[in-house]
Image 1 (cartoon, helix red, strand yellow):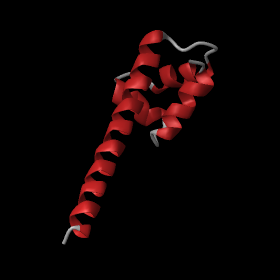
Image 2 (image 1 turned 90 degrees about the vertical axis):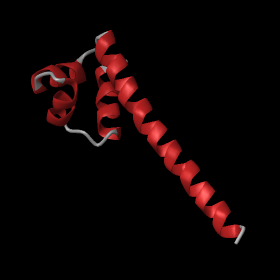
Image 3 (image 1 turned 120 degrees about the horizontal axis):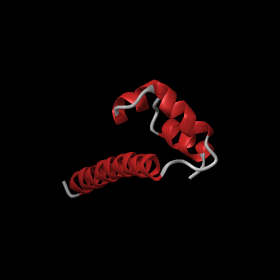
Length: 76
């Protein structure tokens, strides 16, 4: 993962550098460095993938709940 891809993930999550730094328990400068890196450190890459997966899972859960709600409304 490049720094550009790392930064895109951060934006996808709606996080600023400061917010992501708080989430990961690091200094904001550490995040800024990762956003400029040619290759992001594997631990930070894994953390970003995990955060994105968590967001994707939440979206799926919402979609399933909505589909179930729509099905229940149709069956009435």
